[in-house]
Length: 521
Image 1: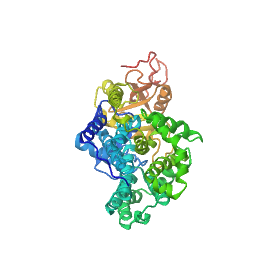
Image 2: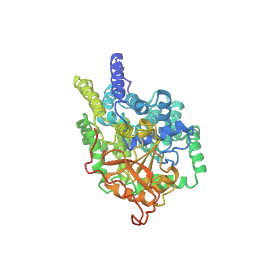
Image 3: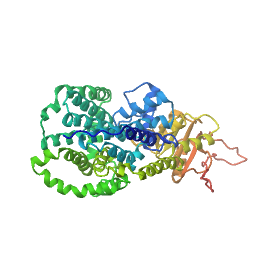
Image 4: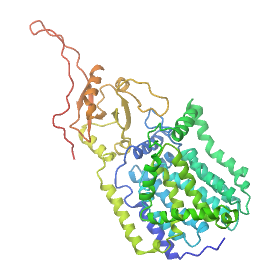
């Protein structure tokens, strides 16, 4: 292994300042975007408010079991220390961005000596990491923990001293990755295993599975899973089937499960997400066939082991993502560290040129623009609208057969539920609806601290259902973002009519949809 070239201190400082600027600029300038940002933040706030750090809940009544708890712990810890703000909710993603930038530098030190600064600059200026660094998701924490695990392995495999502490770091980071997203967190372990088989080197691969590291992994991972599956019978089966098998082998979640879905999701993600370095990425792909020819022979793999590892780190998980039938752009976020390494080895001069500074300025302006963009799913706009339309205090907002805006938990300080119009039975874990409209009314009655929301096109149906249950809807203004906001009151008891005025019963037909619907600014 060639010696690492020293990097000038001024360059280290410039890269660090630029990374901090990209990570934290305008981090809290916009509200939470539902559904994902609002849901993850709401689950974290429920942990913080209840003191129950074991059970993830999307509200007081319904558990949220789509992901293990590490992301919620990170958000709750940040909000608990820094205060309830969108800035604090996004700090874990910003720190993950910084950690991935630093790990790109450190990994390049072992895989492409002398290209550390170039690789780090490539990473922190690619469009995908920059945008994802301002989103509340599980994906950036997963990218950071997986990259940390790979870094531990690289130090053990390519470093000057093969100390056991690096393998301990690897298994520790894999435990964090598993607590972030479950089995997908171990994908880099597949990369490491295949690499050790193809290019074993001087250090025996068996040491990767040293008993101490594996035991530490299970000691960190098992307690939470054991506790929640013991407390919630049937949860283990749901984890294995609903959250693993269904995501891999079926289109249950309707996420581009068609045979060509990988092409329409992941190709644009790589092309647009790697901007402004896309051309260098495609050059790397174009040179791959020649490299594969060299790697057919053991000597070629050993001589070119760093490049082989980068290729495996990028291509093997990408292949798995293409085979799995649940496909989303952010699934590829962990692959942008090896992408940066592949590009950084080709573009050291371009990464230090003045146009990079211009691109960084453009990225900061993009951050500002996202904060000013009037997105329909911005929960802060919903909070302002509800606050302006309700004279009294609001303790709960319920969405009737509509996408819930869980970001209101942060912006309005309320619980959020989603109700079904009908009384259909819901599954025990991660139901689409928390309960039915009937059940909510049985619990809350005509409580004006509860605000209801439904789609304008479903208004008549909701009004009819309310009437059948003995309630009427009282609209809170006109249409907002295609929705009606309303409170409920009980229908007055029937009045007997005297003989001189006829007989019959007075019924309320419920309020009609306003003839001139307006969308307040």
